Length: 152
Image 1 (cartoon, rainbow, N blue to C red):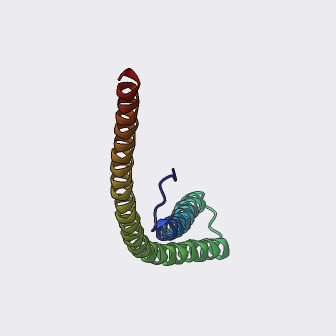
Image 2: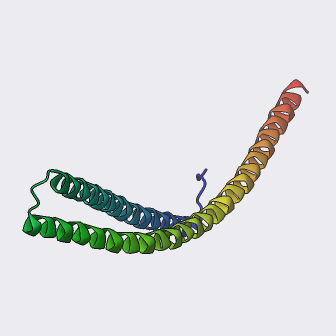
């Protein structure tokens, strides 16, 4: 007897591929988020170091105005990069939310087809077991009839 064949198996495979693609898209955006968070952290660290360095130069007594000006420009540049990274990070958070929604929709579609598969398998198994019982009953009836015919 043939095994279970799900007619919508190609659809299920397509839904699984779609879900996997959505997972990869979410992972890529998450990776971008981590990179931006690291960049933002680095910018904040740079700003803090530049401020401390400038404070130390000013407290040392001998003020090098050119050096202090360069230090202030470096600090402002790090703050500008930090602000730019924060804006890009906000955009990434919005994209992550959209990508996660798309992933949830793809997973829902896959689960719907898997549910259909489970129902079809249950029906097939029930019919298969019923057919086997009928065949066994038929074999039992034939054996009983043969025994009865042999005894007479």
